[in-house]
Image 1 (cartoon, rainbow, N blue to C red):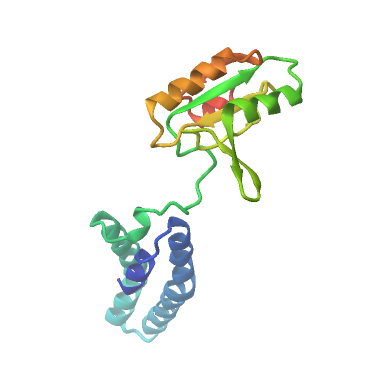
Image 2: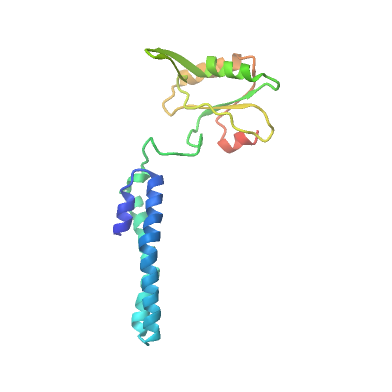
Length: 194
């Protein structure tokens, strides 16, 4: 239980999973091996009850470790279940709403980059020059590889993107001469199949 408690204190699922395996490999596994050797020695010396108890401990120890962690998750005590913003995730997988833009075949890469700069990004003057960032409501711009080899631009919306931002972006995208088709709210695996 103490090991599971220590793992549950992590605020990131990634660090918690690393702590889980480190504790399992360097604490639980050596204890299980020691208990198993003790069970074998007790069985060799005809101490059946002791051998059975030690063998049961070998099985019970990892079960309690994993079970305690699941119990801490279930009760809401584990911090990593409520991951912070810094947690890494597969690119684009956490965004539910998005538009996926299929670029017309034969469009020069310069036109695609110009489209990105003028429609999907915003330039903001700063003291040190110009800062270029995503447009309002946009949480990323990706060019996933597709099976068909088409040029695809995946544009996920942030969770706090307003309907105004979304409709303005859709309108700008539809008006662009380089856009062939717009898909909405595709799952990331569906984008790769285009």
